[in-house]
Length: 456
Image (tube, rainbow, N blue to C red; front, side, top):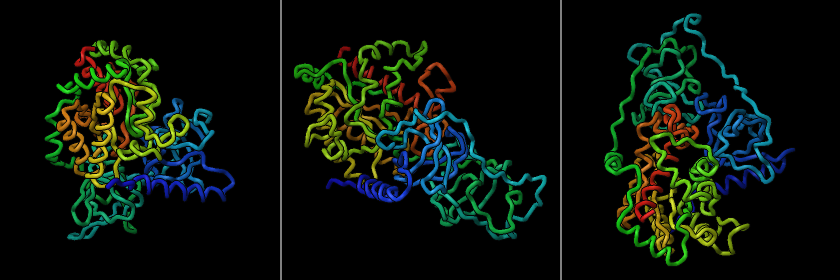
């Protein structure tokens, strides 16, 4: 049975926020598309102030120079800080590019300096020191934001404090049931009255996390898609029916919008460097497809929505036409990159929907390239396993982005889901420590490999 779990919840929250905004003097400028980190400055390296639930309204004040971050506050004034522009849905008529540029850093209280503070025994001998989380927190392998995220803890959870870093910015904790253990920021932990961080023992431990069998299995698959024996047949049938050999489409969510995904290749905002200079031919061949707004890409789409006419853009799609059908009619490509990452329902429903997505494109003689994802929000890598299994079952190319992200700091993620950002300079080692350059590079490499596999 098809599920609308994510969209049902999102729509209800969104409508509630809209109804509340009606009684305020000013309508919010935008709304959080997902649970959204609010940070003290315009970048993922700045400290997190809070986590806003999906649908929260925001009044915008300023933007970073490149408009990748916007400064705003909640409609009730409770929270103020910087959020990623990528995960905000703006009201009609509002453009963040009209905001003034700012580099303001929101002040956060500093912990007392150890030399000025008395040493307070953290807990009596034989007893554990416990504390409470004040906000949803990422749990990391080590005491800095470059460390991989192990888990997330909601607000109000009691944790046992094992240690702290020398700067008192991070605490090593575990939950009472022992199910989660790792490092969290001390900024949003409430210690018992009279206890100071300088009474907690210093630690530099890196928490070891065994690799799951699913990741071990996925590690055996190449990152760059490999053209399969079926690809040539699909491609040739597509040419016979009029599909364009120099076009590709995208099916996806917020990780596939052209502002961040592939659009740089049409905008000229990239540096291939000597190692990847050969990819220029592919960029030239598919010019126009990279930056194009696909009818089957939207920040809230999942594997069900792209099949449902309810979510089609009425300004470009016919009545009763689903987003993918609309996209094919408008563009008629020879290739399609399918990257559907968000799912809040049952795995079987995700797999069934993804199967229908693949069936649609094959029925229209378009070569599908399936993509794995960097995050593990489902906790067991089951979505990536399902994607890889479907690619194998259908004998289709798999772009295994997961394995490109695994060696990166934080697995290429800033908060367990959003990719770390840098521009597409593939010749810059610093840029290549981030998730987005690798997502764009390996997608381009996969498109290149599959296209050349059919004689391109």
